[in-house]
Image (cartoon, rainbow, N blue to C red):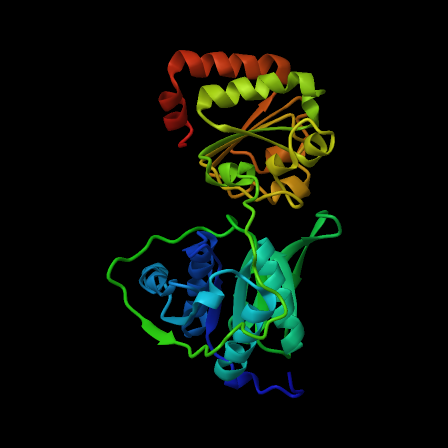
Length: 347
């Protein structure tokens, strides 16, 4: 990146469309929705960057969610993500087209690509962002993320360099409603013999545990905190989750103690979820946990401490002994029926 960048030459907000096995990740549409909101504030366009083999078919979907343009790079050598190959394509495209903001998902792939691109471009990168706003007058991205172990929130800007890059956690931005028939411009990129000289090749893909994916898609999550006392008491949470037709998750202390697998951990160092109903059982509500569930539709908190921070984000708070409250709730759900309970809380 040359010094004394002319910021006026950089326009447009881009979103990297993460794909695996040719399927674009849902977080892409969440980022397109966020990009649309930011772009409308400064009157610019939104573009998605689709890289893979056979991913061009997602351009229409991107337009429906709010994109105006789709840069499409397709080749069999691009079927699987490789950092150096994807990074080279993206860096060349950024230098040619000059977007002012570039958003990527805060996933394993997105973090890998974002750090590579930011390093090559010598520009700033805000990682694990949970809020995005725009300083309209200065056309400056205000990227907010937890810091100091999650105890505080920091808003980070990149005043003098472009593009302004940020990775955004899945599920923290609302997914916009698609507008069928909305159109845009497809720009196909010449990729030549891309990847032929790359030092790495993908020999085999080993699927990761689908536990986190299950939580990611769950409409109801019942999460246990250290307040349940021991692994032996997990049955309380499991029974309530079963009655509600939901999934069981936990806070970091619970997973660190081995009471639940790490893949079931919600929060800053776990996964971010956005279920319709989130029941926090014996969870204090440290910000490290809250950032992973605060966008849930309805949050019910059960805790004996009326001053527990979890009540600050809960829509329904129950102060009481969880060993009495949770069995009573489970029984009530079984008696009234799951559907009736979920309709009551809007789940």
